[in-house]
Image (cartoon, rainbow, N blue to C red):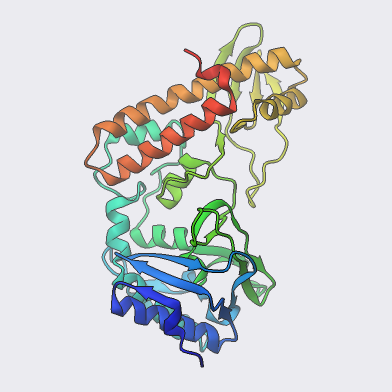
Amino acid sequence: MADLSTLVDADDPIVGDLLVATLELVAEAGGWVNPHARLLACDGQLGIECDDDTGPLMRIPREVMVRVDQVTWVDDPERLTIDELPNDIGDLELPMLYTQLALHNQCSKLPWLTRTHPALADDLPEPLIEAVRNIIPSFRERPMTPIDVLFANRCFRIDLGDGAGPQRLLIPVVDLLNHHRTGATADWDGHAFEVSISRPFGSAECALDYGLERDAMELAVVYGFVDESADVAHSAPVSVDVPGIGVVQVLGTGRSGSGTLPPIQAFEQDGGVIVSHLTFRAGDPHAVVSEVVAATGWDVERAHAVIDILSRANRDLLKPVIDDGDRASDSAAAQLITAAARHHEGILATAFPEASRP
């Protein structure tokens, strides 16, 4: 086997050894990582760079994917600890499980998530939580443990064809890739996960598109980072009173399980109009107008006027998020949400400039 340590650059020798062990298990399963790639670790944060700018980046076989939901975990907010293993755990899945457990513990991932992730941080002010819920109603409605958040962030939901249905899989090496909306999309052929090289950051860093066409606010509360590549803003659930029409209510629903956005559905009810969802796209006001016209039958002028009011309503909901977040300057989670809200506001301003006017 080739010296895989040349593919690892880590500031912690233990983390470096665990990344090398990960690559060795991938190779033993018949997988590979591009020889020009580097697995990076700095201050507990992980990523991947590659000197090539096109071509395949990695192939990760099914045998080394870890079925995290089949493992019983100890409820420990500080460290990943196994309580019970599944009886059918694979010969390579087992050592990969222990390797990934040790890697994330060495990087102090659970304590870091507890301090910084909006879903967990205990220093997030209650007014800010309520303000975010006006945009994303599910925010912090269901308590999550650090283990829940870790696997929600790092796993892929895949149907292995074993009758168990879609389940969360920790896919080693792939899970080191950070997100960008123009990043690579992974290819699952039933036997392995393949990813091509995509370097959208203007550097050697590689990225993956996490999918579901989430906007900056959604990515902040789900994944715990600010996505500066986001170019859409989905409308919050809002109701506005429009002269000549009545109450126009946007439900904020409509995406399929795969994240695709079907056509807007609109119907009259109780002297008003209910709209399933609305998406603002940066720099393209015509897109949302055309979608609303098609759904409602309104003329362009009326659709334009209604969307202007809806865009303003969305921006009004962002103001308390930004104001309350600015006041919580000592909270890393609050600052993250504030930065995401500002990016979201910027998308609304360029997606429908009329609403950005005073």
